[in-house]
Image (cartoon, rainbow, N blue to C red; front, top):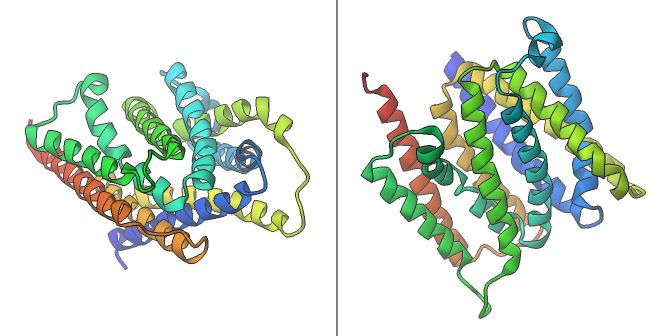
Length: 290
């Protein structure tokens, strides 16, 4: 097996674990507050981030050095709040609808890259972004005579994901991956620890197992993603992320009995198609000399 082939396998496995983690989050959010679940998850995630930083050249001391302390803090706060809001989205809006709207995040990144990163976007990508946002409107189309307000949560989450991606691109210009990963874990843990203890409640019976699994999947998914990025270029991994929508939809239908409505399916196809096109156009632009 070549390095590239193993990279694809690690990326696909990471996406499947992420989707499975979302399904477990939805299950736990039915009985426990999302902040409590995030609090528990972040202890495992921060421990993993510290382990990665300790193994990096220069150790934790080196990982502490950053040229963008404010951006690193913003990234950490965005991610931890995004995780908590995503869980609430899964509980109220459902796994399928939430993931369908989350899929629009790369399109928002492409749009925000112009004012925030100074990137240029050609007319083809502008049309793709517009088409993708139209796809979101199709997903949001009322089914019972009115707008479903619970869909505001995944919309907020998609915007958060976009700003997090922009901030990550900015720090990636000057920072090593271990530094960014270290601040994600530590800042997120510090933030959630300020509110998490107030939302703790007794864990009943078999739910201890699911809390342990969600902590394990949080570590495994990020580790698989690290292995994938070591073997593949980011532009090759980005399209695979859309498989998370497929896997999450399968879990939503089979486990939670969610309905895959025509507007969600049609809107998702539009959003994914537009997203794949913008990724392809960005790859073409990067390959051009000068």
